Length: 99
Image (tube, rainbow, N blue to C red; front, side, top):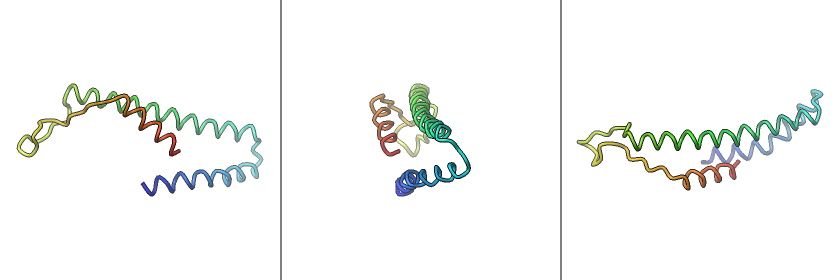
């Protein structure tokens, strides 16, 4: 958790330095804007893709019981998955808020 917070803090403050380096190399403001927008789109789309694949995996794993457990050790013979769209949405909102 500490690394995630420090990474976000560094990203916000390191971005100004990155822009200064790009400007010193002759990059135009329009190009920097495109780079920034591209990073944000990639971040947002990555969250959505992760949400879709994670939900699909948990749904399939719950239906087909694809992760078995040793019945001599555990009371259930498989890992139970109970996917919830509400859980996925609030986790995504929190992850985007941290960013």
